[in-house]
Image (cartoon, rainbow, N blue to C red; front, top):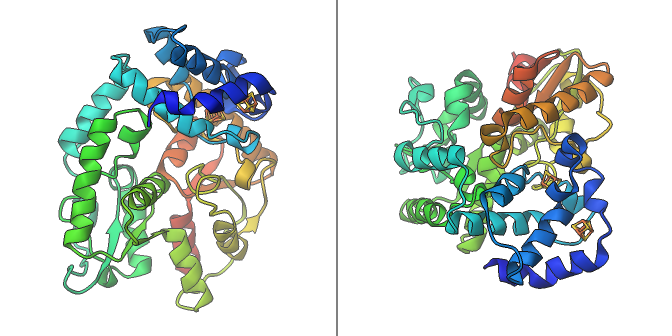
Length: 360
Ligand code: SF4
Ligand code: SF4
């Protein structure tokens, strides 16, 4: 694909100019700049395709301030986030990179994670996983949970039963960050290695606790035509509860749930976390929830490159959570949770820890 392949879409946008995409765009709500919305971006892309607009550092600065949260697509018939991703690829190819992204992508290619850390396997010390001869189900930890929430991750596999799961000796990065910041060549390199591993080891199922890994791996498998089941750990817990393999008590107080964009809007996993939370807490919804959930501000490389904007968006979400009267804000994504913990003002918990408490 190239930007020119979206000519008809951006022409449609130019003709419609309805501006519905602005209604809930979290970036527009903070910056109030129409240029930064899908409509503004589509106009710039039409200009690029027609040779009237040249790529520039200013253009990159404007159009990397988008979390790829998909909120605009709730109100628009066009594939706006797909178009934005294509624009990022184009900007990287043209040499207009964001320094922070460039550095983080280098880290991914060198260390397997954008943080440049080497101890990704420390979280699993002492856990006895199955070998690939014993199971065809792979547990994929990703890079953020091992480094930022190691204890939560240990609990996650303990609840599932590590003896039924295999892990890669050294995980091959899913490439979520690389894909979303426009580095196609590097992403394809990672994907080829990832897919080869799955084929060589005849993997039939992948379970992950990270929403970003979940969407990226699903997309990758679809592109390569591999029929491997990918689940988020919440789906596993719901099934275990239904089959009475897991029993929980209502131990938590007033709690609300933040839908990570990658799990809710992008993967339709809306009901599953609520099924669990209603059993273990005094659950209440935020005004914007499910498919209409507001983004936490961390995605699409925005937290790394534009921390101030990212924090302003997170603050708004925290206010929404507090308005429900909840004492605990629960989510199921390490990025969202890190955002909220940075802002503070409400207790923040991963759904895995919430279940762990309720089972205990
Ligand atoms: S991006 Fe979609 S919603 Fe926004 S102006 Fe264009 S057509 Fe309308
Ligand atoms: S993906 Fe999200 S942040 Fe980006 S333009 Fe759409 S609504 Fe705004």
